[in-house]
Length: 245
Image 1: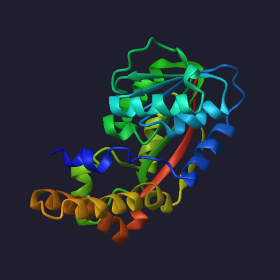
Image 2 (image 1 turned 30 degrees about the horizontal axis):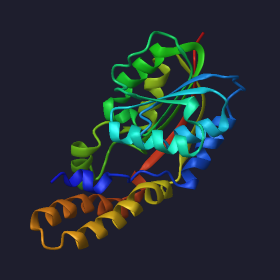
Image 3 (image 1 turned 135 degrees about the horizontal axis):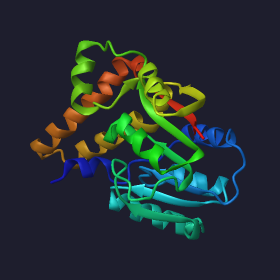
Image 4 (image 1 turned 90 degrees about the vertical axis):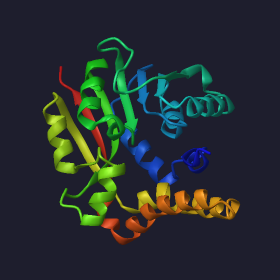
């Protein structure tokens, strides 16, 4: 049994609080008529659908999870925006697009999965000169983590950097930093750990007679315990960047 699929299938739905930041970031951009937009690491498409509502552009929605793309395709059809959203299977680490082809690139919570620096390089390549890159990514206030948190993150969140490290990576890659806004730690709880806690509780009831499943779910629940113990170490930030001409 794929217990991870049991946990995360149809799991990710951005809260309205998180989507408020998506809308705020888009509002800070200059007007763009019929922009070609890449949503890199779109998942099931909460930011993608917001971009469709907010813009009149064409959106390439990229993700390596085909099941998530199928969900996005269904949701976009339900909202009547399927003609402006094109789901594409692929990885941010090696984008199958030509140089300088997108007016705007949007990515939320996906860059650390392939490496923040390498993702920046690849997104820079496909973004037009003078184009905009909006990033929402996990951060931590500093890298001197408590020992038990460091052990967990070393295994599961190896791509997480401090805010200062991320800003330096950005500067080195010919981006102008237009804004950087840190989100409150409550977003982690509302968007991720609270629904995870609810899902694990349901699955533990469902598989109460399966010791292997319970052991797996209990290991996953340790992440929730760590967040409750060290909430001040869990952060994220929205970056609005412009590629140098």
